[in-house]
Length: 560
Image (cartoon, rainbow, N blue to C red; front, side):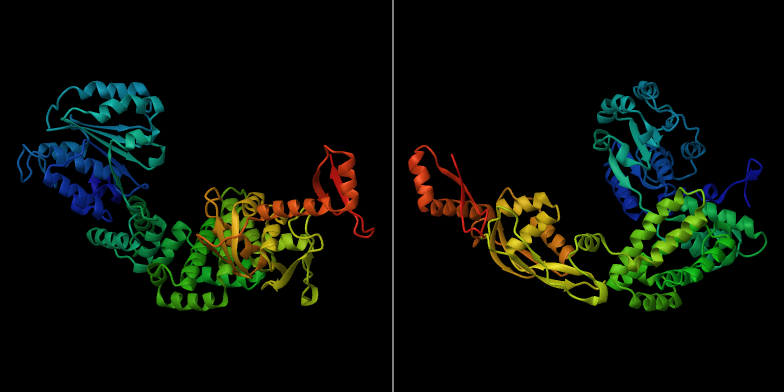
């Protein structure tokens, strides 16, 4: 326990870093700043970004102290990277009462008048230190006019002035301001680094704690040192004279038991809704927040997906061996498709529960939706069912044909044949066996931009079911091959490879259609009846030929 003016100082303030070496998880930034100080290449403005509690304000004060430290190893005339923390300047900056270091909270002083007041003081030299340092926290809260007022001074400040900006929302800062600053993105601190820091602090505080409990606190901190120390402080107070234990931390911050989260996930994926409800209510009764339970389920799905795809090995290996082995068994029963569908349902459900007035009931309904997800068709399968492309009853495969639309380039007696593919869910999907059928499928599915591009901009080189080689024009849609392959895979239930070639393509479908129309008109003019019409009406011509009645064996022409 420490006292500050007779009161307790929280851990986040008590153990705030006094030197750059004390900053955890920001090695890249520290190295860059060290080299800048040692080489005398200091920027006139620094922009520190990152999530809450990773050390932005602390770093700003350390930079201010390093700039003004009067007792460093290099003497008072030059900057020193590591401030001494003992001279009058360092102490004054740490206490927040140095006359040349001005801290401003942009969240409460957002207007242009506040910035003009700051700019008016820039012209005057430092009173006590070597530099006048302006630290503006949450700088993204400044108004547009305030940023505009700051631009000129920020671009060409006096040599005795340094600006340090800190923000959690760098995207809200005008690019004209960002381009005038040296930017440092402070990273989230890893769980291992947080746990190591917790252990050091607990040792100095003479407090015992379980390693699993510290892991839970690090997980809840989500990369924020300040959040982690605040939770640790609360846990120490909650434990009293007892060690900080796992169950104590779990109950205090409303976390679900990870083992029981695995139980819940398995029950839901096996369709055991009743057991899943019992597990959820048991965790809720033990203090777990339903929203946190969903977040844990999302982490489980993400972890299982990495395990299934053998990616992100660090995330996969961070679990204890017992949970790792259990996760392998669960992953073996599920496909990547199952996991991605579970992710989508849980992610959508998380947003619903977050704003629900009945979070427990809303979470239960999300679990019901997830339990029955295996019976839900994806959008492509649903469209196929609606269009009557296949009958799934009894597992019978149907052979479907698609009639060409009026004016199609194919001959009038031509039909686009398709083979059928049965997906894992039992839905029969159509698979075109010609390039004409592929193009028509895009029209039938309403992808008119791609349909038009395939008609007008694509020259076929070769075609086989599942493999298309095309030559595209310069004005074709970007990523055309990828889009065509993706849609065909979704609609037909099989893999399609679409390759691009530089040469070898024939005419486009539109060119073939126009050629056919010209041939039809030439053939029509050879008919005696048409010739008689043209002779009787010298200014007339055949503009189009349409097959209107094969039964009567007649040919109809439009002439003008």
